[in-house]
Image (cartoon, rainbow, N blue to C red):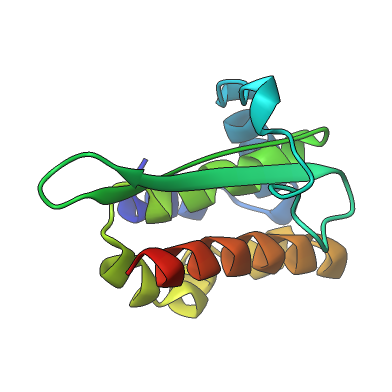
Amino acid sequence: MTVDELEKRLGSLADRTLRYHYIIQLGRRLPPMPPELRTEENRVRGCMSPAWLAGGLEEGDPPVLGFVGDSESVIVKGLFAILAGIYNGRTPEEALAVDLSGIFDRLKLGEALSPNRRNGFHSMVEKIRRAAASLA
């Protein structure tokens, strides 16, 4: 799902509760993460619920990023689904140039998330950005 599609869908939802439920639906639709990727190295620090994020470069010309994620919390899984829509399929350089603050505002995520969930979201972003920087 692209940022424009997410913006259209989230923008059509009248209030915070509906946006929150939509994010949960996104999490429920995520395919399960392979169990062997649920390692300490892939653990996302800063999330309220246990969460894992793994990825790297996928073959192509040019090679692009591909991330998978999972959590015991469907809202965290939903946030990962949003991040996957933003970052998967981009080159590491493109990923590093993403204006996530602007996207965060466009999607009205600040209105939908508690401060603790925002911290976890930003922890996932930092993990993705570190991976992109190491692969650039």
